Amino acid sequence: MDSIGITIRRLRRWRGLSLEQLAGLSGLSKGYLSKIENERTAIDKRSTLVAIAGALRVSLSDITGDGLEIRDPQADSAIPAIRDALLSTDLDGTEPPIGDLARLLSETQLVAALRQANQDAEVGARLPELLLALHTHVDKPDALRSLVTATHTTALLTKGLGAFELAWIAADRGHEAAQRLGEPGWIALAEFARTQALSGLGAHKRASKLAERALDYVPTDAYDVRGALTLTTGYTESVLGGDATAALDEAAGLAEHVEYGNRNFLLFSPANVVLWRISSALERGDHAEAARLAATVDPVELTIDSRRTTFLIEHARALYGIRRPDEEVLALLVKAEKLGHIRTRTNPFVREIISTMLARARREGVAREVRGMADRMGLIKTA
Image (cartoon, rainbow, N blue to C red; front, side):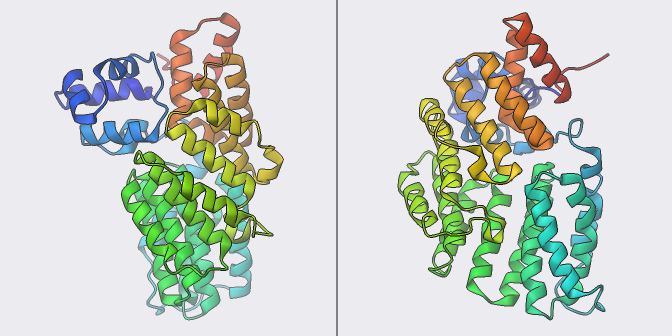
């Protein structure tokens, strides 16, 4: 797998564009793009990826890669079955019931928890049968609620595996189930799932619009769902170049009202709001603020491995941005990889950091560690 910089250079040449032309189309400087293409600097903002993809008229996944070489083969092998389960079902309720509904409701909760524990292969193996069975019980409200949760889990899993369009199909099916149910809180929850799928596709304006719309009807006492949607508006505002402060502050206030932060598997808590603040700071290029915020977080408070993995990645990005020693950055990334190897190895910003470190290779001791991680990420080509 090529680095993002090399991929951008290849796509630019394929489009017949000069560096100067790409700079004009993307709004980025020619010098900065040259450094990216030659692996002398790492892309550290999602908005930069979106701008370059738009200028090249390609998708984000065309630039970041699908990660096929570095994903868990067992988890990835579930993608065709998940796709078939979604494309072969609907909510017309004509299929005879499959399985006991009480067992399916429990299975839905288990699968969602397994995904939060980074057990992607196990989740992938369980989801197709669960999705197929839940669709045969859509005449029951509990089944529709469970389908909202199951499709949200599906969207997050497939998004993490690079199947971004499938993530949208899953999230949109959950929204359809919520609409059928007719309960505002569940409709808003399903809308949040759609915003997450859209972020994987780089459609941040659309994600922000859906989140803002959902905030108009989400119940006032549904603090977790309201908070998650508010965080989405703040982060997308950061990606789009705006000020996320007001939204993040509002979310922090909402988090104070939440007794059990992982209701609906959203992990909406004060610690998670800080994590979103870190991501927002990184998006606006304030690595010092991101590092300061990261130093205030106790990973134990994030409670689940998927969030801890994200925190370690964001902390590493912050330290890399303020030019802390490579050893410190790598230590965090190695911890992240141990907690969630798929999430870490496929993260475009991690790949950029490792690619630039590998190209630089300033010290032999660090270089060995970098080469090891680069190899596990598919960034070292063998003959």
